Image 1 (spheres, rainbow, N blue to C red):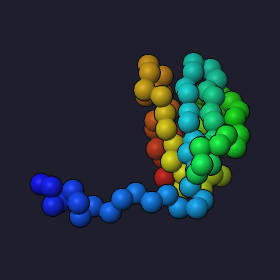
Image 2 (image 1 turned 180 degrees about the horizontal axis):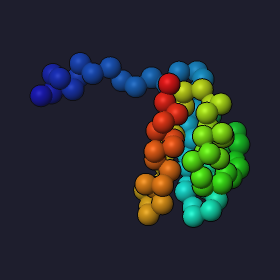
Image 3 (image 1 turned 30 degrees about the vertical axis):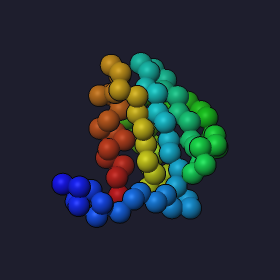
Length: 85
């Protein structure tokens, strides 16, 4: 088992890596974009509808999106998941 773990390459972020944190709400959701150094690049809000989430995040290149794991999470997962290339 130890050999297998050592053979897995370490995750190395790419220079253009960013992370989007998405906090889903009933009507509005807040999001925060962090650069690869963890610095805040943008904070904003978006309506919690499939159309609004798609419009906002469809234009974003492949990016890691982290969603809060509360009661609203199932509402946002399908529209965000469908944005995969």
